[in-house]
Amino acid sequence: MGIHFRAISRIISLCIVLFLVSCAQSGPVIHTSTVKLLRVQEESGEFVERLSVFVLFEDDDGIEDFASITVRHDDTGLFWLLEADDTVVRLRGSDRWNGSSELAPPPGSVFPEGDYTIIAQDLAGNEALQTFSLSRMEFPEKLPVRFSLDGDLWTMERNPDDGGFTENYLFVYTDGNRLVHVTKMPAGQQKFFGDLDTFRRQFEGASRVQCYSETRDGKAGVLLSPVDME
Image 1 (tube, one colour):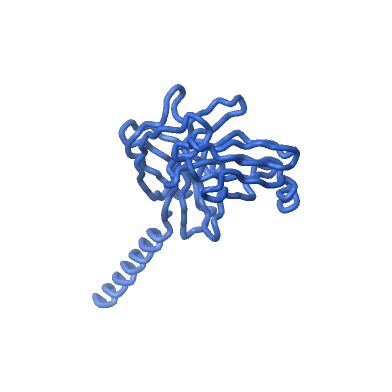
Image 2: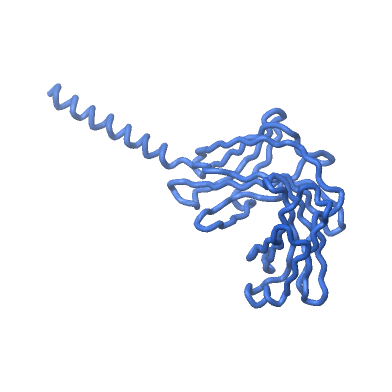
């Protein structure tokens, strides 16, 4: 009777261990993240500061288990909460990145320097953490690149005084604000040309383009206001 009881106890204990292990495996994981401090040009021509945060999130229960991302400044306790519906999904190959480029500082302020914590949470409340440090930097007084249209012909012209924002891109969006194409300006090239009709033929619903410049290390960027393709 005692041997039988001990055997049952071992089986129950093993089941509990297996259950706990399975629960631990189903928690979220942040494989890596990207963080950029941005200056974004509004329709008025004025610039505002934004923070872009994207995480490569994985959960054993699937992408549907993703619930939210919280970005918290450790010293002040300031935090920004992104529910699943507030995030944008960017696909890079087979990788699925969740996040937003529209985090805004408190009114009349800027993002504080220092250490931040990114918290990704699944629907069960399990969390994964990752940290990053933010340092203020000088943005160029002039736009790193100038964009112009002559009919359907577009031109990107590099500003020699780009303040270190040397990597220039042209984004193509559809009516639903979906990013469908990215073109990079060749390194060392002063001017870059193209035809809007090429985008219309290649990408159904393409409706606007937008210039973006960033530093070589990818930690800061300048996003110009979008231009309609009409």
